Image 1 (cartoon, helix red, strand yellow):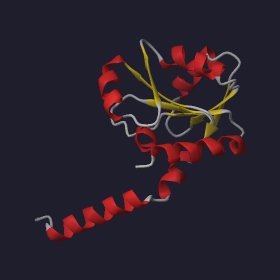
Image 2 (cartoon, rainbow, N blue to C red; image 1 turned 120 degrees about the vertical axis):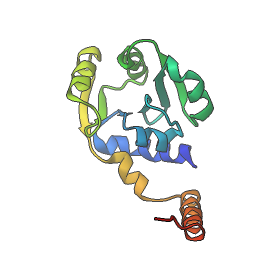
Image 3 (tube, helix red, strand yellow; image 1 turned 30 degrees about the vertical axis):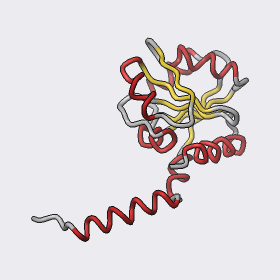
Length: 154
């Protein structure tokens, strides 16, 4: 899969959304952007950087699965490492996936990220996922053929 291409497309979309960075928390979207499959992972996208965050339980798994993103492990909470990354990127507006981030998580980020405005986003990654890359089309075709050759019995 072309993770770098997906990340770059998303990074180019940020200015038109009025955000400096996007925090991706939907696990399907995290996997689409990095290849990571697990129950705890977040991706920070800026026009210049892609960073994958998780806690220590997934350090080895992230090292094996995450592609085209810097990996950062946090000890207690995401906001502890997110704030310095946003400062380093000079990001003052952070997009968050409105369908995934709970009100409690949004409030926590808002309290802990001084000088950063949070802005709800909808469907940015999902819209990218609608267009299939040649490798994805091949996998779909293979799955279809497999199903035709080995129909499920009832």
